Length: 360
Image 1 (cartoon, rainbow, N blue to C red):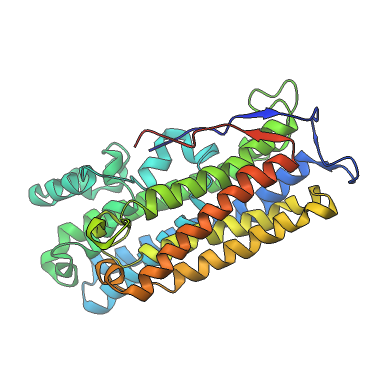
Image 2 (cartoon, rainbow, N blue to C red):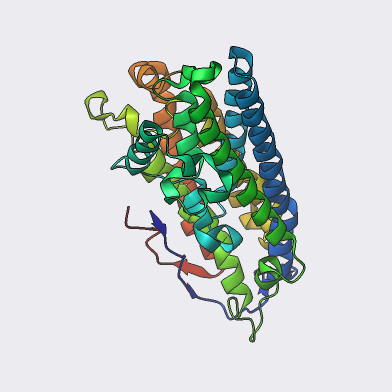
């Protein structure tokens, strides 16, 4: 899947200011700075912390394989993966350097490329796959959360609680170490005073990426608009059919660890925290603030719908009550797409014309 940048036609001649005439001016640089300091930097710091805990738990499991340590490693995986789900909506900047985005999570993987590669490495006991220092040179499909989920929850994963699982555990530990390394690198880069954050938060005519305030805010709006398309059209509709016969439960993300719905909830929760921290509501006229209030309410509703779903995804889809919650989640994300892509964009003088998803 390739995310295409949101393209807009600027309807109002603003540069660094976001406001309707009746409103006090709100600097685009302030909005971006608030998004960075209020959500992005703390979220990546949290991811690094969770990834470090995951790596440690894998090392402990490998040193002392038993049921308790396997349970701990699986719990650490779930916590780290859900933290990634909350910040993966930031699909630009440092996470895009060196294919980190795809290396962190290769998804969707409709041809099961990652699964086949992981299974092949397991079958051959490939020593290079069990070395964290060599993981970066492996296929992107073997380096992140998708591969580690299979190692911890997939076929024969219970072998990890015994000495016979030594190779599989070493492989998983290498992947966890790779996730820790990448998340740490991205966190450091977002915190550099002269790094990408400074480029995004300071649009100017000599800025190589963001020449105007509208371009900087367009990037932020793209997080919401493109993110909602990804969550609804790729993540949810990738497994939820128009009817039960059309369902594809094994196309659901994190189905092995039973974290599909939790990941969807984390996606929207991260989006809500980003929206609140950016204070975009301050750039709206009093008569238009209902848009921001509605966005927050709908994001909260979407999180609640996803959190009402639990258990194996195939059983979830067969349960009318839980299936209704997934349908409600789809409706909420469609409503949010309208609020962001039409209502809010119009208030900021941005006429959205884009295809948010390109390719598979």
